[in-house]
Structure formats: C-alpha cells, structure tokens
Length: 307
Ligand SMILES: CC/C=C\C=C\CC(=O)SCCNC(=O)CCNC(=O)[C@H](O)C(C)(C)COP(=O)(O)OP(=O)(O)OC[C@H]1O[C@@H](n2cnc3c(N)ncnc32)[C@H](O)[C@@H]1OP(=O)(O)O
Image (cartoon, rainbow, N blue to C red):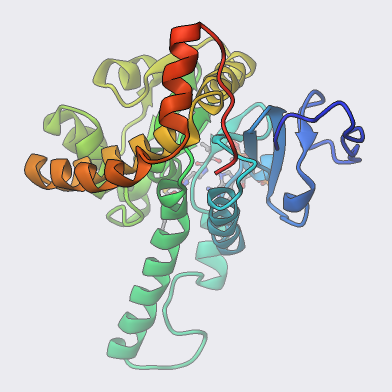
C-alpha cells in the first residue's frame, strides 16, 4: 500500500473488527480466513493471526493459508516490510492445533486409507515437507518480516519466529519449544534455525530437550529477540515503527540485504562474497543507489519506485 496521493479515494472501510481501528485493511488480502492483513503505515503490511478463542493455535488449513499470505506479500510491490502478530490479549500462538491433530489424525500420511508403512511414511514425509514449506514462506518472503510476540508462544510459535528477520516481544511472553512434550522432535524448522540464531548450543539443547518455558528476558539475554516491550500494544507499535523505518529505505537495498544475509547464514564467507558480487553487479545499476547517495548529500528524504 503506497502512500495515498491527494486524489486517491478514501481507504475502504471494513466491518471486520480484526484489525486495530487505526489500520486500513488491505482489500487484496480480504479473502483469507485465518489472517487479516492491514496497513498501519505506508508500504507496511500487518498480518494478524486470527483465532484468539483457541489461542491462535494452527490447524492444517491455517498453516497452508499462512504460506499463501506470505507468498502474496513477497510479490506485492505495495509492501516493503511486514509485521506478524497474534490477535487477542493472551497469545501469539499456542502452536499446533493439538485437538485437531489428536482427533482427525491431521498428520497420519495415509489420507484416511489403509496403506502399508512405506506408503504412510511417504505420505507423511510429503505432509511435513508441505508444512515446512508453508511456514518457510515467511523466510522466503522477499520483504523483511518483524515478528511481534506476546503471551503464550509455544511450539510452532518458535518455528515461525525463527523464520522472521527480526523478533521482538512483550515482557509477558512465555516461550517454549514444546514439541518434546507432545512426543515429537520439532520438525518445522526450530531445530534447523534456532542454533544459527543464538550463540549458545548449550542453551538451545536445554530449551529444546526439556521443553521448559523461557521468559522474554531470557530470550533477550541469548539474542533470540532483540527488543522487549511492556505489553502487547507497545510491542506491536514498536514493530510497526521498525517496519515503517525499513519501508522508507531503498527496497532494492533492503531486499538485497535480506537475501544476502540469509545466504550468508547457509554458506561460507568466500561463497557469500562471490554471490554478493553478482547480486550487486545487478542492483548497483538501478536508480536507487545514485538517488540515495544524492539524498544523503542533499540531506533530503529520498523516495523510491515500487519493486
Ligand atoms: C508435524 C508436527 C508439526 C508441528 C508441530 C508443532 C508442535 C507444537 O506446536 S507443540 C505445542 C502444542 N501446543 C500445546 O501443547 C499447548 C496446548 N494448550 C495448553 O496447554 C493450554 O491451552 C495453555 C496454553 C497452557 C493455556 O491454558 P489455559 O489458560 O487454561 O487456556 P485453555 O482454556 O486451555 O485454552 C483456551 C482455548 O484455547 C484452546 N487451545 C489452547 N491451545 C490449543 C492448541 N494448541 N490447540 C488447540 N486448541 C488450543 C483450548 O482448547 C481452549 O479452547 P476451548 O474451546 O475454550 O476449550
């Protein structure tokens, strides 16, 4: 959502109470059932998980929709930065919908048919791959994503947070890598990404093996989150402020920085430097680089074309 020009019609009003009142719902995202997407600032999208009565627990339909939301945001030239938060006062998300998983066998791999172990395993592997892919859409989103957490943040909450570019939280956030307590090794990304996000392997094994709760302050002390705020509202406000600041910068530079940092996480220095040469040999030919330099020299705020 680019800033409206003076001739733009007023933003459409929505009957949904899902977005906070000062945010404009984005019409092209109105069809989603479990997520609202609104615009609290120019070029900023705020995605809210909308299942507060179940503490925002994720059913299969939800995680599939989550992937579609972030794929759309990735290709949306009117979006330059994204905030993700959970609706309601109690939870960012209580993780996997354990009631659905227990009742209808969401993750059985057999599609409801009687099949042998090899075929069940193949089906299950496909389901896990699809689940990983849906949550990973946030990491693949070309725009930076700020995850603003509060309250209950369990299991899948950590998988999701690990895919974000920046994590911040409210002081009441109660985190846990809960999977061991429901009888499984976390398989949607926490075990792959968390050790690369924080410095201490001992701490990672502590929280992943014990499934114990850890607080916002503990998360801050190990570097899992970079800011702690007093309450949900202040946390979301801080996330939106951060996103708005990113959205003012060159989208070529911001999106390139995300791409190159994610590449650096997964590759060696020499390989990343080579990739950076190639990336910037394209990016530096664009108009953003000279425009940004000129605005620094002239002490003016630059504007950049959509990307
Ligand atoms: C292949 C596998 C892929 C992914 C795996 C992901 C792993 C995980 O996410 S592990 C974490 C799973 N989550 C949990 O174990 C949390 C379960 N919930 C609870 O333990 C409690 O709800 C609580 C978080 C401690 C909060 O308790 P309380 O304050 O007493 O609230 P409740 O009354 O229990 O909850 C309110 C309402 O929400 C429903 N709900 C809460 N969590 C979930 C959930 N994870 N799944 C489904 N539903 C949940 C709860 O049933 C209540 O609903 P009512 O209709 O009001 O009964």
